[in-house]
Length: 213
Image (cartoon, rainbow, N blue to C red; front, side, top):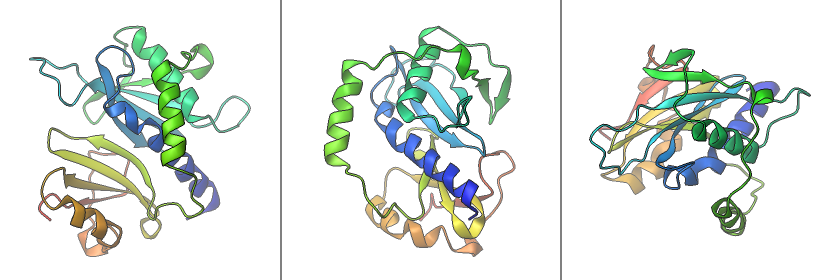
């Protein structure tokens, strides 16, 4: 893994970890985090109706593409990404200028968006997250650089596998022998005989289906 890409992976993993709580805590109203999709120069935040919604017609997911660096070529922080997303969601239904994986894609001009200030919930989460997830010298291997909820019982994980020279998308079920699967996942994702390609997903170089594992 070359140095620039390694730095990108580290930042994507950082943003992903920071935003995880918003799968159950709404950004605004009934809009939650549905995924974080990795790209070379940006992070794509997927928003939509909560996973446990009873809505007859849940909101269609929307993808906001946020650059990983600011105008001064400095890495953007995860709280800043959160503030931008909250502002954009609060502004009402967006007008996507593209699509990806069947979802509307909005490319964010960060210089034109005023980030929403942290809420009380954000501050509570920051305190608890800091105390329960202390900094570790050794990061997870392979690092999780994104994910996408794929239904009530599925999730696609994006793992930065060095041998693949890019993210590997791993589909797993949220039920079944989940503890055993997670323990075996670092080894399973490196088994090249499991690798396939998914031309419908531009966020990965390889795909692995572990839904039947």
